[in-house]
Length: 383
Ligand SMILES: Cc1ncc(COP(=O)(O)O)c(C=O)c1O
Image (cartoon, rainbow, N blue to C red; front, side, top):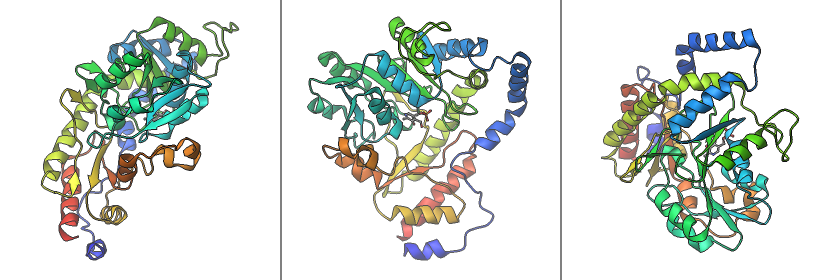
């Protein structure tokens, strides 16, 4: 039956719906961004400098924390945060099985071992109830990931961390501006890491990242690590990295930060429309957002309780709708992490096969959301 509808001719007057639309966003900002670039050409201060200081101040204020330290990308932000907290060889770090690979990669790069915990079947974030059974004498830290823009169960994570003397590193790479019980994602744990990869809610025109914290010593350690171990040129207190933030990216991010709240609100509106229109389709499970949590819908991820996902993706693609999968396999099930795959994560494994990310970007038109929802409804009716 599904085959039949896949073969039907697409309606050529229907809107096409990309998964996201970075081109239109940046075309609208073209003049502002050109001014930034021209200003930098006048000074030739391409790395560090006032643009970086200014962005760090504005991003710290936005996150409601004391310090923001710009770095080269979100993966480095995680590595530097782990190292700044002293995590290294012979340590273990708790991490959810469903996340972008960088969260786990950073743990391995710090010298520690990732210990994967299954996800909560309703929120898809780390299942805090399962963390304690995976703690050992080597456990040093927990990295809750605010996946898809929705903060993890931080009260439970912090309570466990306090009981066992563990550090908490929030992976906030997908959650710029989200809130958990009134607090900004990124202001709750010991330290938090952001990515400004172009497709993120706050995206640069290239790679960029930041570490944020309220702790002065952690901030100083990250500042040193990002620039060859020193705060001043040719001063080397520790073995560091070159993970500085470009001035161009800092200036772009500072400008785009002005629009972030409004654009997150646009995402939330689209999510509400999806929620309403998809509610009547029993085979589609829409995102569950617990009370006290404000998601910023970096992604809008549904789960299919019937039908074939590839078939549905093809059906949507043929009608001009792009979709994604975040992520196709739990990290411990990927070849790179096979040696850390020591216990099953059945929820993450089952969900990896049935989740589907629908188009979601601030400038989406309501008729595009309606069109996607209508196609899903048509598809589910006939299979
Ligand atoms: C959850 C998560 N963590 C970490 C990262 C790594 O960030 P970056 O790509 O800037 O290195 C990403 C980015 O895709 C992410 O989504």
